[in-house]
Length: 326
Image 1 (cartoon, helix red, strand yellow):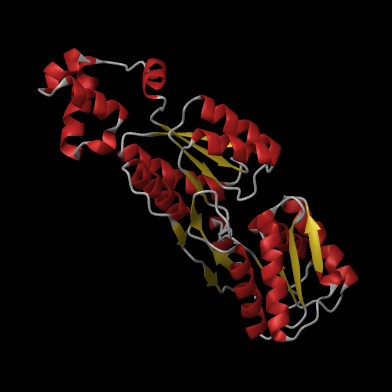
Image 2: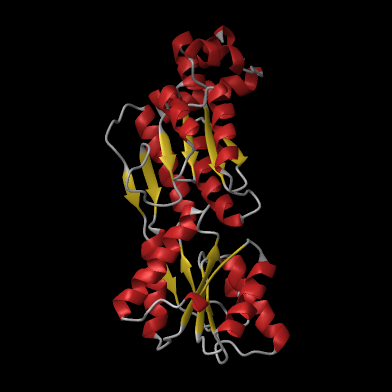
């Protein structure tokens, strides 16, 4: 570090801050120091630094699945902002399990992460205890909970689902089905179903159990859900799938069977995966600001690390995208 300080023409304290607390320095000063670090080939001992400061320069982010490109967008936004501030992202996959999330939170806190970004808004009691004891800033991104742990940057799943259901009703569909993941173990699915039912109530349409299904993730599940619902309720006019992968699986099944979309049945999705703009027909969906959620989450963490104590509750909203499938 003394060699770096000499090469950069700065104090030893400035080198230390550039490596461990970059947000406390100007961009120009930090660049001078990092250029000297690169020129000399200095590799900081992060283990020793973590022990000394009780915090690392790493932010932990836990998503339900790294196989899902939706979460990749959020992680990209987070990583871009953290990288510009000299921090690093540690990404983990909870597999839609609260117990696995608990284990990952424990592992990350043991590595002295300086902040946590959690997609889930439900957590086990032990996870809550660990977070409270650690005292690190936390962002939740999967929904807008009534009682967030700390900060929240997201959108309302219930309001988004309600908006899509009302949109379909405005397109003169009355028999509207709804397919989601298991609402017992997935709060986001539960909130989306709540929004769907709220829309039906506002329209004066009674709830019909034959038009509601909960399935496993995957293309095959979407295909099976479509066929099952159309068998139970042949008069269904539109099906709102609370996930694009389910909607795409359903669309593929209509093509395999020769059913016209939207002639035989209309299909809508939730998330706006890139492929939705290239299917035939293109799929109507809800567009969520996944990249911006990641960026704003990282910015909120940085603000907190700089000493901003104000509570953060950011609702970034959503957009209904009308396409040929409805």
